[in-house]
Length: 183
Image (cartoon, rainbow, N blue to C red; front, side, top):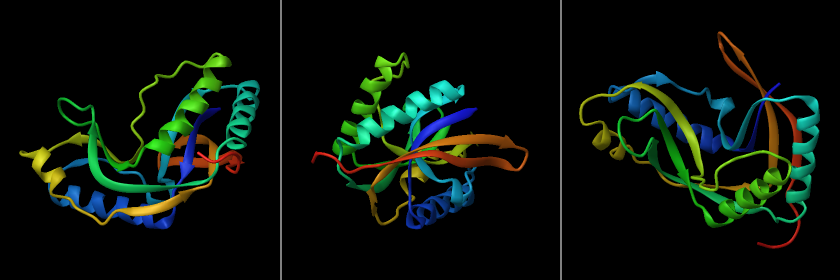
């Protein structure tokens, strides 16, 4: 089953993503744009994994969630991947210290179970996967402004992703509520 771990985002974040998508399209960008109800903050993408790995990941999520209290995240500004060259992904940035702690804790436990992810993590919410850009694309991205939006991170989700001709269908297969020690 194709899976990833993520943080759900509220409707206000989806609205900001749609707003930024519309500004980028108007500015001449084209690509694949996630639909509003699929917007999330990805922590780890596992790809195709079996049920045993799903159970191991769920245990890691529960273990981590028991140690971390819910916290506020703020989406602000835009950025791109890769950081150099033409953009492949445009994203909304998210503030980082508590998010970085959550990522590091999960990553450490995942490494103990044989998963291999990098230590560098840029918290972000994908706006679009870019296929083409207009001239002066950097300026056009930086010209897209929006009011920052804060929301509570109170759980982490393991999500299956089924690819269809009409877009991805996401199903939450495990949810771990945060609520442990203060960070």
